[in-house]
Amino acid sequence: GRTVVIVGAGMAGVQTAVALREQGWDGTIRLLGAEPHEPYDRPPLSKAVLLGKAEGSAFAVDFGSLAIDLRLGVEATGLRADEHLLETTGGPLPYDVLVIATGADPVSLPGSAGLPDVHVLRTLDDAERLRPVLAGQHDVVAVGAGWIGAEFATAAREAGCRVTVVEAADRPLAGAMPAEVAAHMTDWYAQAGARLLTGTGVAAVEPGAVVLADGTRLPADAVVVGIGARPATGWLAGSGVALAKDGSVATDDRLRTSLPDVYAVGDCSSFPSARYGERLLVHHWDNALQGPRTVAENIVHGPDEAPVYDPVPYFWSEQFGRFVQYAGHHAAADEMVWRGDPDGAAWTVCWLRSGVLVALLAVGRPRDLAQGRRLIEQGAVLDREKAVDASVPLKTA
Ligand code: FAD
Image (cartoon, rainbow, N blue to C red; front, side):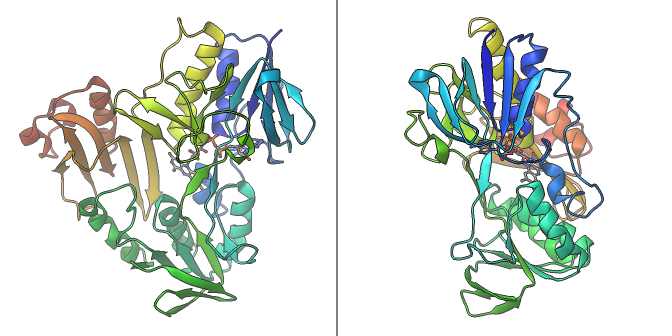
């Protein structure tokens, strides 16, 4: 029979293996993971696992009964595509079809390499190293007020730590949200008892302290760096696989790479979205769930029978006691329509392009999110007058 080799045993790799069996693939499936742990889910790492409320977050997948050959602690180091051969730390592996699902690596703080109290939060090992820091109710400094920084600050406050978040931009979530929206999220930090310092960079990390660009010294028993993640594609150098400028594997709309019989999916890759008219690199869980279905259908049924990939991206974040959800993709030029009081507990922002709903952010309004997501999929035109009234269901606006 034919063999599919999947590189990376995170959400995207595991879901690809499972989806292949669901679609009826009866050949060999080998799933390689660099980490030694049973494959696990990442979102709980900055939530329940970090707080010690959950031991771990292993996927409930029985690899044995699905005849998935799971090889842990094995890293792919290179690809010889003309020979259909993957190079790994466990020796070369032949494949008929290869799926790249190596995820992303956190960006580290320049000059902090090797410092014992500087952490990132990407893996189960990272979370386990951070647990005693939280349990010890220390002074912690988070660098970066993005999704991870906000979730870490939430957990650290809940654990009773003194928390300062340092952000180089003038507001939280600067890469994801416009200033008008982020303005209403800034207060969340103070309300939770965390200090947020914006517009300031880190000059140096010293034992027990973080020194800011203006000379301020912040006491820090531990530093957590959340300044983004980059596709883990360095091992593909020289393989001939085409990468986009951001380092992601550049796929087509069936998640095929530039090399024959090689697919890529999840945080490591980007795809062209006809819906949004641009190439999207999505670093969220739902993309690592949906993308694998497209990959499996294309592998099993071939491109004539299988769908293209053009999802409405979706993600959620739990921060400062709020459930924050976003669907779609907006651009700076899109028009914003507000539902509800953005200084209150629950509100929504819709983004319209020529009247059509293209994205929405819902804070504590899961029904808006669910209805909005469907409206985006349908390309529905929203009536602004009705949409601003938070008491009118979005689907009837
Ligand atoms: P990964 O999960 O990164 O898995 C890739 C795997 O490949 C890793 O295990 C890695 O060790 C392995 N690997 C890498 N290189 C190699 C190699 N050369 N050989 C073999 N194996 C290799 N998203 C949301 O939507 N909502 C959330 O609330 C949310 N919370 C998050 C919290 C945290 C702390 C983190 C880190 C992420 C969170 N995300 C969240 C994002 C979501 O978890 C990711 O989008 C998702 O994990 C991507 O899955 P993936 O399989 O593509 O990559």
